[in-house]
Structure formats: structure tokens, C-alpha cells
Length: 116
Image 1 (cartoon, rainbow, N blue to C red):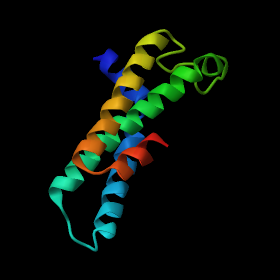
Image 2 (image 1 turned 30 degrees about the vertical axis):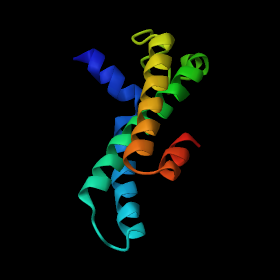
Image 3 (image 1 turned 180 degrees about the vertical axis):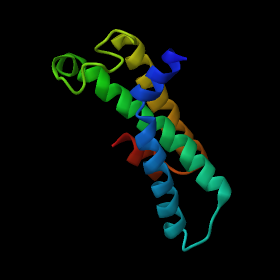
Image 4 (image 1 turned 120 degrees about the vertical axis):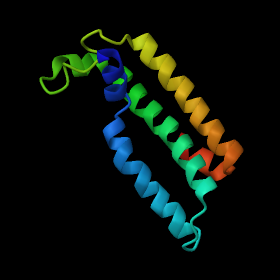
């Protein structure tokens, strides 16, 4: 169970829980107030994959700095509970899947915005 908690912390799931509904509301507004459940579902899946990947890769990049800071030194990578290699694999795979999902099920613009 603690391993699952580490991966949830690494992907910043609490941030996703706030950002994803906000994106869904923006999609609803952009669709002139029409709620398309299929599009929203695909947005949520692709966005969650891509943004979780970005959070993971950010922590993999900053692991050395995080290990020195009091506030961040107990994160999963600096403590060694998750290896940097595993985090990179998870991040790259999740990012690629998320962007591909958005491209296939929504449109190229959504996929590109997930990349940048």
C-alpha cells in the first residue's frame, strides 16, 4: 500500500484532482455550454496521463535538489522508495500515452497543448 501512495504522491494526484475538473469546465464552456460526456471522458483520461507524467518527470529532474531541501527531502525519489529510472520510464510512458490519447480521441491541438 505504501508503494501505491508513493506513486500517487509522485504523480501529484491531489493537484490533478483540482486541475482536471477545471479543464472539464473549460471544455464545456468552449463547447458553448454543451456537455459532451464522451469528449470530457477522453479529456480527463488524456489530461490525467499527461499531467501526471509531467509532475513525475519534474520530480525526477529535481531529485538532487529535493534531497537537500527540508520540505522535499522525504519525497519518493530522494528517499529511494522510487528510483529515478522508474520515474523517468513512468513519466515518458504516461506522457506519450496521454498525448496519443488526446490526439486519437480528441484532436491535434489538445495533444499539442499537452506537450507544451
